[in-house]
Length: 324
Image 1 (cartoon, rainbow, N blue to C red):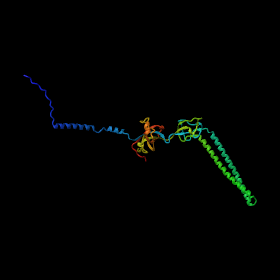
Image 2 (cartoon, rainbow, N blue to C red):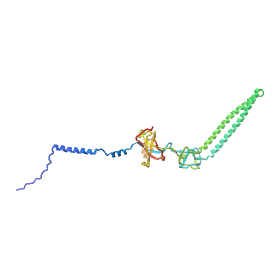
Image 3 (cartoon, rainbow, N blue to C red):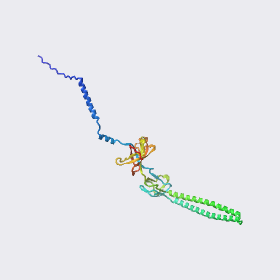
Image 4 (cartoon, rainbow, N blue to C red):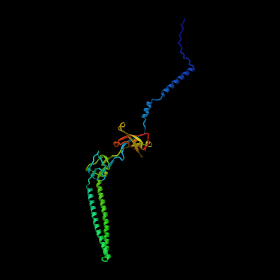
């Protein structure tokens, strides 16, 4: 008898009804909705506040440098000559009218002496003509009276009257000569003053290239460079795209490029130029050649003693409140 052959059982997947399929799809949709809800929940308020605080509240940012109104002043000798005296040194603080340097003044002093002598000569000539004119007038009066009395010569009276009139004209000419000689004296004194160089205002001597014995002239270049005692300002180069949003009176913060974290000062806009120019403070030569900027001048809210030419960054406040 043959043994029965064992057949391997066949696994059959149970047949799913349409209702089961619908239940499965519903579970998938429900799980997806839970996942989306978890992902879209409101963010942490602390994160929002950090992002808001990191957003810059500036209307514009510009490069700038510290300066003064009018800039540094370069002085040269107004006359040609040999320097006889240099009265100051670099770093000195000078007052208005203080002597800086002087040329050899001997030729100018001789010219003053000569002009003074011509003035004295003109005065003496005028005085002499005055005496002669008085005597001639008196003589003409007497001769005229004698002629009227029948005791004098009419021709002599006419000659005396003509001589008196001529002396009046000579006296007027002598007075004009005296005025001219006085003018020459004033010119000589002015030339002597031009041989000395004085400080036009209170300032610091930041540079000098003068020493006694040197030959100088107005065309030989500046002998002294002065830093006037004036308030510091900032000249910022405002990109043309920001010109329309920056107004006079707008508040700004000025940051030192060397140490922006600790060195910054409050300022406000004084004026905005009406002329475009190149970006001279830009480091990239290609950008510097193509960019067009407008100068914006700012004044510090409090007086600062910053170095002239110091590079700074200016951040203009986004909110603008016009000043009264």
